[in-house]
Length: 612
Image (tube, rainbow, N blue to C red; front, top):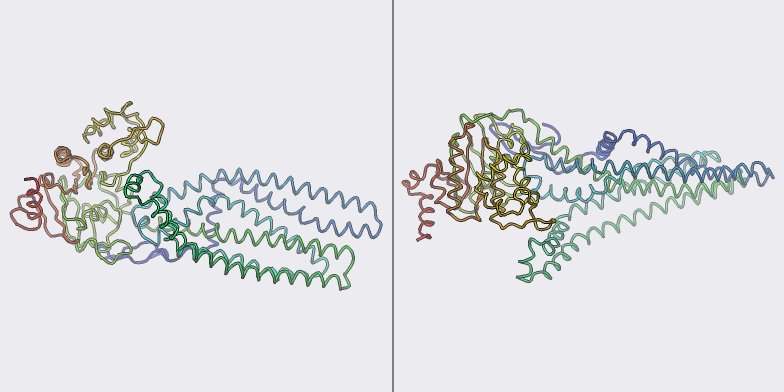
């Protein structure tokens, strides 16, 4: 087992694993991986800007040396040396300015190119996570909330790294100049160590507090979004909770800000003490030179100029180190944590997805609990789903219907037990390969505001621009009436927030989602989780008849799973699975279950009575 995983439960007699969430990766190795990411995308620009940053530092740091020689030349009355030093100072100033401009522009060009690569990398990582644990576990959400705030400035950190290199070169040159007066002046660097330590320690303390109270900041953002978004606009105004949401947002933000501000004050005090130590060392160095045998005019001017510059250089260095420690190193550790998380989830996925189902799908003593919950959402479920069948899952709210669907779709791994596809463990199948053979529609579908063709065609990217294939999916889903009402048919833009965008009713959006689910024509598993809640019972029944016919005639042996509260539709399924309180209580056909006079029969009669 790798160091990035911890036991999550058992699955088929083996230990299932999931990525750890308690520790971030080492800082320096994380920074190195992020720097390497920039080098991979722009190797020539990286070499160029690093070289420029180092060259830029040299003429600036040498100004103190020119001042020493200038003072000695004036005392000696050496006019030629005076003019030479004035020229050297002018050359240093000019080179510093020119190299600074060139470095800034080349760094900005590099940063702009890396920005897209970095943000694309983060988006691709999150999108590649096979399950929903990353979006639902509280500790992961807090960590991702901090990462999202950092990822938009991580690209700026390349410039910060270059600035750090430049400051370090300046410090090194200045220390060499000071040692030319006396080797003991090198000890001035020792007095700068507390400032470096403080700069490296300070952001880590502040970031830890920010992450500890990140849930309050997330909640504050949630209240703000609820108060200002169009989706919640009607209800917010009808019930008149706008002021309440604003007050809650402020109070939650205060619960985040107060401890963060307290931590910032504590670290600011320690940082000030560190700088006071360096100030005392600098004053002592000046006194040492002025009162010692090396107290020439040039040396005194050198210690004053170089010492003052060393103070600025150390300040710049520790400032960049603190910036790197707080954003770059901290952000890079979270980015590497996300990379490790994705890698751990894709480990041991060495089993191929079958081309067709022969034995079907089996659940063997499957149990599952959601992250952060002690209650089992499913408990000891054993079930066989035969190929080429229509399976209905029924039960009251909270019985575990949607949870079972999520496990079959590989959104989660079972806490215990095993799911097999034709005898092969689903947990060892690559999630993307399994999803290629899976399709469906859900009650909480997403409204993709693209053209109608692309909003539907996303159900199978290989046919995204295939209008006949999209039209066929629309027909199978019974959504031809929706497309017919659009001004430009499949070419119409959906969503009222876009130019010429068409608003659809909830039921019309639902038919678009159903059409998207029908883009794949030979899935091994079709999941319909309350997909027709906005449609009338007759329309739902007609649609289900199409699903059932397609499933039973599938050459791939595909299984269609329907989650619905309408028993008039459920009764036509080949197999009905009844869940109650997270447990499987009944399995059979409608006739078999009615004959048993159990839970299903009771639920059926209650609903039937409501129609009379």
